[in-house]
Length: 228
Image (cartoon, rainbow, N blue to C red):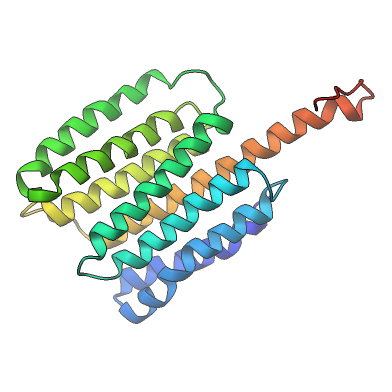
């Protein structure tokens, strides 16, 4: 099952190394390839390439790819990218709530995401100007994604948290005066790529586990429902 993710891992490692080594041409070349490689991995590894899981998962990746491309523009691309990532979060959030949950309620520790949203908004709001409301909405959806992800398998839960960390660092780096972090672009992309990859890995594992549970009764000779 890991083989489909190999191209994503290889391109991701090359991209991260290009950031560490300061090779902007290679960074620009590899960034647009990241999400297509992940989309290939998802569709290759899923037991079914059609259906709600494939559609919503693909939308989450595709909107992330459009967001990546928009953020490569240093001008108005940030707000456009924010909108694309917001749509991607909505796609993932819908998928988590409808098909990926392994428990009825989020885990108790997901309450920390409420504290995160209030604290981050409090830090960024004085410096965000007219963008404070879009940032608040984006943070609310991102926090909801992480809370809902906590009710899914551990891969999705960790991936959602990693995504949240990436966007938090991005927001601090862009809006908070004096914010300084070693290799901040590397940290943002490392946590982003880990988040996207772990979310998709968790989606595939859950889809395969659900498919296996559905096929076991039939293979054992149990009668099948007409509604199956």
